[in-house]
Picture 1 (cartoon, rainbow, N blue to C red):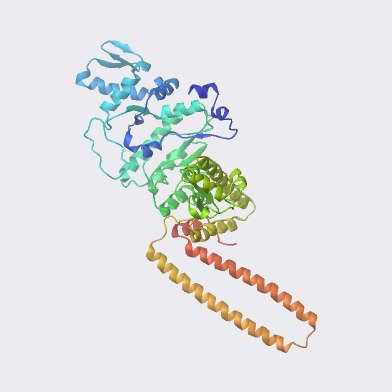
Picture 2 (cartoon, rainbow, N blue to C red):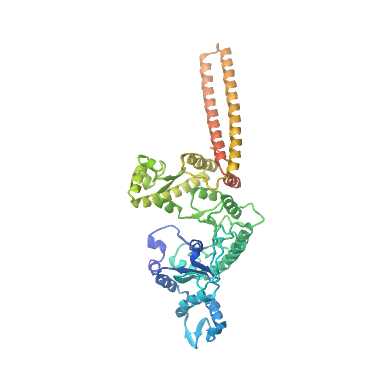
Length: 509
């Protein structure tokens, strides 16, 4: 923290002129679920590495005055314990055997007492039952308490432009609604504590996080409380953890649906932020619902697996077919990698296990993701959103599926797909037959008219042929566009069709 203090804030440290956002640490409740305990005071992390730097940072934040509730709670338990009759609390100071121990000295003892006295039930992100009988929930490591107050103080030190409130994150696959409800109410209580401790309201915008899992009623409870806090922005959390796409679309649409008069929705004049979104397809659909911000490790993580994002999905450059492919990653991409490297060159670097490939692909993936967002903004401002969405979806769900660059997530059941394909194929065949019959009749009529009008002027004949050619070209173009749209509709899963209906998008080229 002294580094940030010396450089004023993170922007000056890394020389980045734009807005910066820092998260609160709540997501680590999921990613480190086996090494934490959830307390009302905060999250107790079990750190298996050296904790000296962490303790030093917490001490630098001067948190001795912000763990007041923790001290009182733990010390009250100690006072009521028959084995600790000589322990009392006076003016937020612990007195043991008539010896006064100051706040900054007892911090480590307090964390130990939290670990010893608070229920040892391990936070469980799976549906398996964990034992609550053991005294120590992990066998090694040192416990570090992250409270809402500590989280905000740390983010104040970092100096980011947007800071997040600490939230109780539960896996989107959690089936126990009682656990989700408990986490939702705890998130609301923690938000109040974050607002109270936040001292840089003019310099840093605090965002609240809407929780509630996949339950609409819990999402309403969370939104109702958070919106009453009048914050500068609102985030939707607890998604993108493996839930079905249909449920994901339902939740994000409900939270932003301006037509929903019965329940609150995230206001349009404040920042809307979906946490954990990184796939370009997800970014496009969420943008249709009015969301503004996203965050994910996907562009860099997929680069570490030697994969580049493209207009029709992903390019897995480790595959042998790219060994003699001297084309660019994307012809219309102007990033450094696309201008300087071919697929064959990147494939060669990968085969030699040169780690520079991961850096290059990270640059491309981040640039390309931002480029797609730029194209969508242009489409919105030019009133071409329907055409942009249709082209984007066709590239992914038709072209990408055919060439193997895109795998449709949460595709419909096989039986439903088979029935849908049979009906669509039958419909397309019937339409094709009707069009063929019509074309044959048209040709016959034209030939008859031509035989009757052989005596007409040659110039008139040439003019008629020109008009006919133009009309026939327009008809062929319209028929081709219509067939492409029908092909796209056949490939789109039900969740994508539902999302397009929610966003009032009409497929057209």
